[in-house]
Structures are given as C-alpha cells and as structure tokens.
Amino acid sequence: MSADQASPKSPRPSIVTLSCVFIAVTAFLTLTELVTALMDWGTVDMQKAIAPALRQLQANGVDVAMTGLLRILHGVALAMVLFVVSMMVFAIYALRGDRVSRVFASVFAAIAGMMSLPAGTFGVLQAAMLLLAAGALWSTDARRWYAGEAPPSAPALSPATASAASTGLPPPPVPVRPASVLTASLVTILGSLAAGAFATIYLVVYTFARRAYMEAINSGPFGDMVKPDDVQLMMQVMLWASVMILPIALAGVLGAAALLARRRIGRTATLAWAWATAIIGLMLLPIGLLATAGAGWVIALLRRDDARAWTP
Image 1 (cartoon, rainbow, N blue to C red):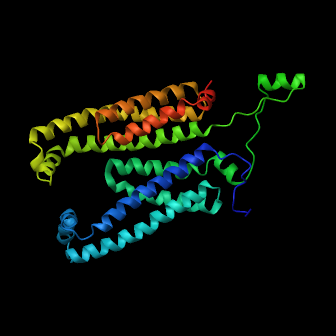
Image 2 (tube, one colour; image 1 turned 30 degrees about the vertical axis):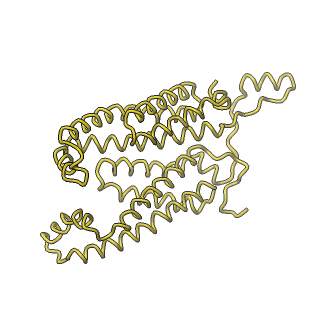
Image 3 (cartoon, rainbow, N blue to C red; image 1 turned 180 degrees about the vertical axis):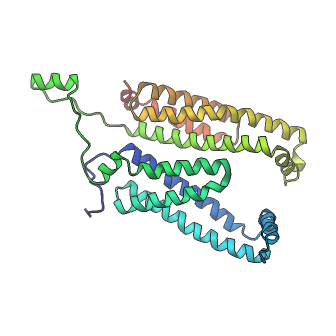
C-alpha cells in the first residue's frame, strides 16, 4: 500500500462518504448539462439565449459578434468539462482513501462553489453545500481516517462492557452501520437537497418572473397544446407543491443525519419523509416518478432487519 492511501482497517467515516458522493454527483450532473449544451451548440435557441448578454457587452463598448462570443463560450465550456471530470475522478479516489485526491477534491469543490455563486438562489445553495463538503473532508474523523489511525477508544466502559469484563466474558461487539442504513441515508439526503433546490428555484421564478414564465410556455413549442388557464392552474399546483416540498426536504436531511447517528427518531423521520415524498411524487406524475421510486427504495431498505436493529 502506498503512503498516500488510507488504511483499510479503519472504517470509513460517514462524513467522508457523504462529502465525496455529493462532490462526485454534483460534478456528474454538471457534466451532463455541459455535454447537452455542447451537443446543441450554435443553434437558434442558444443564440437567442445569449443575445441579451451580447447586447450588454456591445453596450459596454466590447466589439464582439455572435460568432466570436460563441467561440469564446465554446472554449470555456470545454475547459469546464475537463474541470468537472477531474473533480469527479478526484472525489471517487478520495472516497477510496487517497490523500492526494482528497486535497484536489477539496480544492476543486471550493472553486466550483465559488463559480456557482452568480447562479442565483440555487447557486448559493450549491456553493454552500460544496464548501461544507470540502471542509468536511478535513474534519477530525476524516483526518484520522486518511492518516490511517484507528478511531479513539471510548473513555469509559459501557455498562454492558463493564459487566462482561467483571464476569470474564468477552465484551459485546461494536455495532457496524448496515449498508442499507447508509444507502437509505444517502438517497434521502441527496433527494432532499435536489427537491429543495427545485422548490426554491420555482418559488423564486413564481414570485419574480411569473408573467415571463407563462409567456415562455404559451409561446413555446407546446403552446398550442395547452390553454392559458391550464398553464395558470398548473403553476398554482406547482406553487403549493413547492411550499410542501421545502419543509419535507429539510426534515429528510435532518432525519437522515439522525439515522446515521443511530438516533431512534432518525428512522421514524426518514420513513415519514419517504412516505410523504412517495405521495407527492404520485401527485406530480410523470415528473414525480423518480421521487416515488427513490422513496420506495428508502422504505424497502429501512424495513430490513439490519436497519431495524440499527435503531433499537
């Protein structure tokens, strides 16, 4: 084993798993958006989208044409592809215990967070989560694990251990977090963050750009298929759904964190989150199909015997 690899004998802290997975998933989602944009590069829709920015540059005295701006943005997009691929690879290797990758994953996550700030409310939320993930890779438990050190022993014996020691019996085994609990917690946290970000963005659009959003739908390719009254009704439904999603997303994150910490309330809160998410997903079909499937997976995982035993 190389000197830059963490010892496999010590269990990986959950904070390292959550941080690396979040960084890798964020990089992957960004990569899919960049690839999609590159596949549609130079189309009429893209030129319409960047036309306001071009007019602003020209108003400020910058002599640039549409073709020149597209060429510059194409180079930036290619550089971003290389950046997010590197961030994803470093996060994966940091998850495996590579110390050098931990450094680069932290730096890349911090840079990505800073670049997300101009993207409005969602960008601020994403930046905060990326900075927290980068900082979590340098927490006490994470530093100890990457250094290959064993977790600190408890300062005092538990009653069961003390009783076993006095009778000469071996102490009870230390509970190991089941894979079902870890998977359910990760799905809950990532799903809650994604749902919360979606609800926040929609509430911002509904509050500050509702008329422009309705005009965009009515003038879009499916404008002839829906009536203005139907669009307004759909937006009202999405408004109340977003209002319900935000507290449920917060409860999901807190419940999953409590579940990882082996709190009894954690399993109850996570199951409540999963059932609520499954119901809301059924109400928002077909776009809610993914939420319902993920919630059903969490319910199935937490009904396993090892998950029940984790929170006695």
